[in-house]
Image (cartoon, rainbow, N blue to C red; front, top):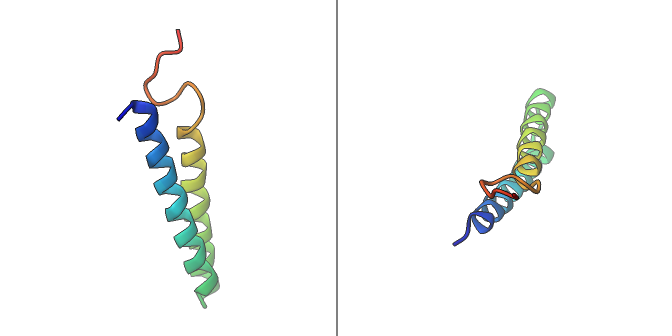
Length: 62
């Protein structure tokens, strides 16, 4: 598998994780827990976007 394919798989896994965390946040009855989960999902989503940017993932664009 290529490096680009691996980073795409990782980004997909991170997006799935974000979805699960957001769903848990919706079910949380404690407002502090809900906010903590939303913040965690946002951080993972931001990291996923950074990793999927062109020029990332170890490929030298030359």
